Image (cartoon, rainbow, N blue to C red):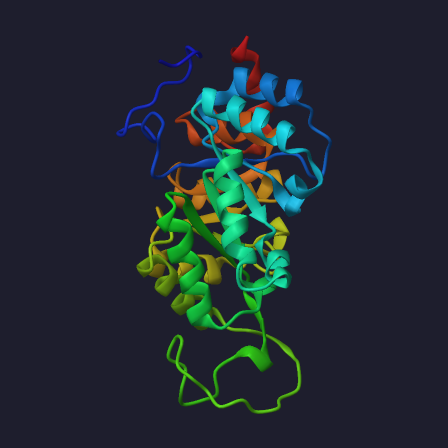
Length: 286
């Protein structure tokens, strides 16, 4: 039941009640700002109906006690909010072949629901990435690979043999960062086929700066992967506004916790025509 008289959840309005497959709002948890258990509790008690997921960004959970993490995941689950690890798995590969499996088991024991895989940082063969997705899914957790638009040219398949996972004889090549949207999409498609729940698109070089949004890139990703299977990092309010205006309330977005109410007003019909107007509509929240 909605706690706000101005907001209701119907599929013919913007999106249904939780758990949602689309129109998902994932918020950034402890990382850029220090959030105590009490702060997280306050955020979720007031905004839980608008928040679907909580993400420990940047491997911040690796610096916290297990007791703290368990309490945070318990608070989130109490409000029907899933908890994601953020990108940290790449550091576990240094521990050997069993390191990643142990990490997945520990995440499950701590109460995490989703493990994010930063594909660019992992730097593993494509078939190994698919095995990681299978392993995560085999223990009942969600898998969310994160892709960036830019790749190291030395990691790209040679021309004429770009099949995902195909063996390519090692050839010494200089390191050079290049854009390859087609490779991003093909890898993401294979991850979804392997069981990944959603694909996270890094804001860097795509939507980090609102005034230079790569609209063509965003359109191609959504056109190939689908709106329900992609989540975009909206790093500022103007980018959030653009996504809602262009793709409607059903687009999945990862935002800072301070942007939750602004985003919800933009998602709702006639609640906010743009980011600036949202400030005025906040009058009706009280």
